[in-house]
Length: 92
Image 1 (tube, rainbow, N blue to C red):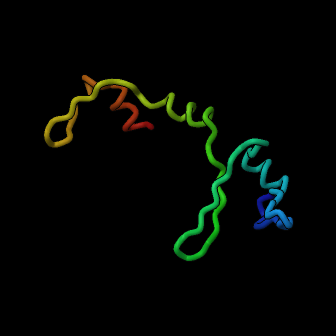
Image 2: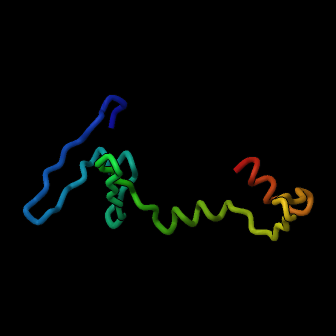
Image 3: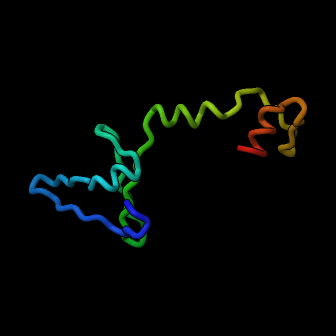
């Protein structure tokens, strides 16, 4: 999709099927077998989102530090005892 494109059009079949335009599939990296989520908000706006695959979730989760973080009663922790957690909080 080019930067000026604002919409793409599909027609629903008699069976309720819609073909997602190739420009949309390419732009969002949607492959055969990927799932999409349809969401209608309080203002009746329809949003279609690509549901992350297991591999995509895995890539996100592998960057989350795994270490025991002890917090005091005020929710404070010692950055020296939990350096990975501290770095993750600051830098993501």
